[in-house]
Image (tube, rainbow, N blue to C red):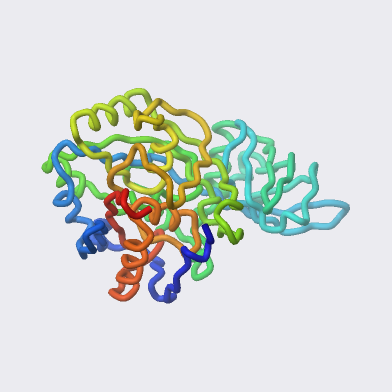
Length: 359
């Protein structure tokens, strides 16, 4: 399909720079094949039924934005790296600002001015270079020591549409994290989950809605624009995910009893669809997925999707169009823009019911 079919104009003032307060006070647009309904995130239990199962991504965002310097032949150059996937205890793949300045074997010193230098410099060697500014960094530290140094020296990697308007601050370390995050490794938040609070979980419990957790470490590739003109020419970056035996069994049991699987976020959905076999049975999963969902895809695992509003021409805009239908999503986004919904990571939410008739 042509990528420009997923384009739309968004006024700058619709981009949220801070989340709603409290988190569950955000608006929620309900999208069915029968039409649209304006609601609030706190209304979520009324659209679900006892026995439904909500699946959350429990990945935790790390401060993966690093600033450093490269020294070679007495010359220095500033380097900015966004870690996006761990390759080994001492290695990360990263998207690097200034990658053209780097050669394999170059040394980069990160965090010189931070507290990380107290435990030893956060130094790395360029181990490999790929296209699109991607570099593999081999750090001098490994395992928990490397994690601690990154936590001290790094910054929260806010999405470009926020970072271009303001710097990250201490508040983002809390705001850009779900309340149930527990597995370190993401460099972008599973933003649909940012709306959840203890109050909302209590309401879901009262309604008899169950919950389960999977892990997909969201990579910086989620923010990369689709530069190809046709979806067939776009390459997805892989992300590491995990579905436990117990969670797979719970999902399959829910389906067998007639309950719906409600994915909280596109990250949970992509992982579940990666773990589903041809019959829709979820298998335990551990590894990388680069699944790319576009209209025409046959969904096997998920019935309902809660998700924020996505960027034009993005892979996530393609995914929601595949899930809820091209025309319903065009109508939904036009309505959201016209009626003042807040967009993107810190923005409002939508609740999409799968539409198998308009892919």
